[in-house]
Image (cartoon, rainbow, N blue to C red; front, side):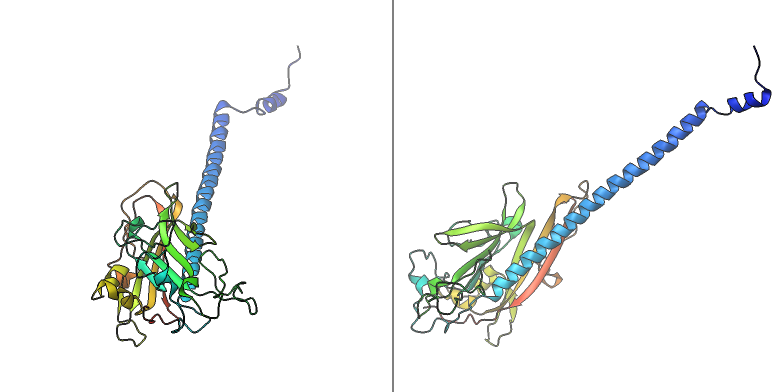
Length: 319
C-alpha cells in the first residue's frame, strides 16, 4: 500500500480538534450563553420595575388630579348660594342621618366607609392604614334653555359624570352633587382609592386608583375669619373644637383649605423582604405626626402631597 507523503500526513493530523480544545470551546460557549441569559433576565426585571414605577406614578397623578379638581368645586353654585328663600332640603330629607349632611366639605379620621348609602364613616373605625374619608358637595350647571335638565359638562363628580344644575328657579340643597373619597381593599386585598357618588337611583362606589394604600386629610381652620388658616386639624380634632355637638357644623364651615396626602405602592415586590423601610410622611415632613411605616415587602412606594385653597365660602349658617 502506498504511503502518504510526510508533509500531507502532517496536514491531515492538524485538521482535527483535541478533546481539551472541545471542552474549552464548550465552556466558552456556555459562558456566552449564561451571560446573554443573565442580561435578558436582568433586562426583564428592569423593565418590570420600570413598569411598576410608571404605574405607581400614574396612579398618584390621576388620583391627585381627580381629588384636587373635585375639592375645588366644593360649595359651587350657579345661583345665589342658598339664599333665604332656598329650601335646605337635606336637613328635612328622610335619608338624613345626622346634622352634617348639609356641609359642602366634611370627612372622618381613620375610617372605613360603606360603598352604599350616603355615609362617610365615623372616626377611629380602623380605616385601611388609618386612612381618612372626604365628602364634597356642590351644585352642577346646566345648559341654557334646558330648565336644569341637561348638564353642560363643566361640573362633574368623582367618576366624571356631568352634573346638571338645579331644576327650579330656587336651588335646593338636596340637588347638589356628591363625591366621596376613601380607601378600601379589593377582593385580592389590594388597596384602592374609591369614589362613591350618587347615581340615578342610589349611591354607587367604584375604584378610582389602584395601589393607593394611604389617604390622609387635614383641614385649614380659620377661626378669625380672615381667610387664612391658623391651624391644621384632622377631622376628629376639628370637631373637638366645637363647644357642643350642635356646633360641630360651624367648625366645618371655618375650613378654608385642605392638605391631602396619599401613598401609592407597586403591584409587585422588587425582591425578597428586607428590613423595615423608613417612615413615610403622607402630608409632608411638616406634619411629622402623621406617618406611615410600610411593611418590608419590597414594593416601590411614592408619596403625593398637595394643598387646595377652597374657592367658595363655607360660612353659610345651618338652617
